[in-house]
Amino acid sequence: MDKKSNSIIDFEKQINILRKRASEIEVSGDNCKQVQNKYNKVLDEIEDRIDKRRINLIKAYKKVKVEKNARKQIEERVQMVEDIAQDFNNILGSIILNVELAIDDAFENDEIKYSLNQVIKASNRAKYLIDQILSVNNNS
Image 1 (cartoon, rainbow, N blue to C red):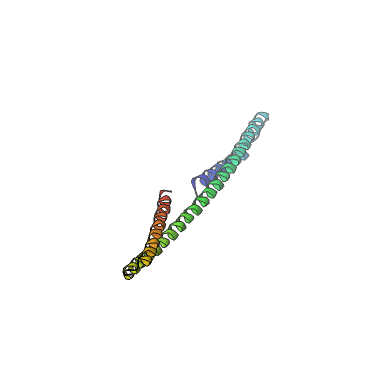
Image 2 (tube, one colour):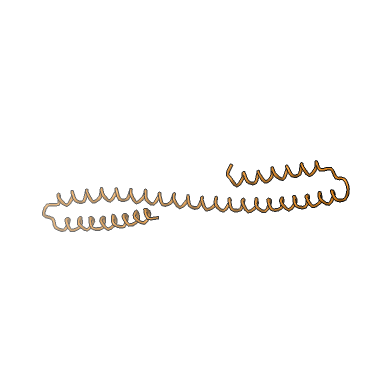
């Protein structure tokens, strides 16, 4: 149990102790009756305060729980974006490597070399964008 639950239980224990003591008081005469009525009134006020505090604690607990769940969902989405970005980065690395090998095999055909160089440029731009996505996620 958390501290808040324990404090509510402690209050309830104290109320039960006060009730027990109030019932043990012998009522003899009007003075004692007035004292017991005042005591019961104070006891009722304490119970009301405890009920209000309990309601506020429950509301606060629910709010924290909702915020925690929202934070967890955001963290899961950030992790998913990072995983996708890293996988995409690995794919781009493979594409660039194979295109560079193809350029070496293209010999003197300038048109093929030009086209393959365009693939490398586009892949490098994509890698740059992935690096930006990863840096944004690492900063959040």
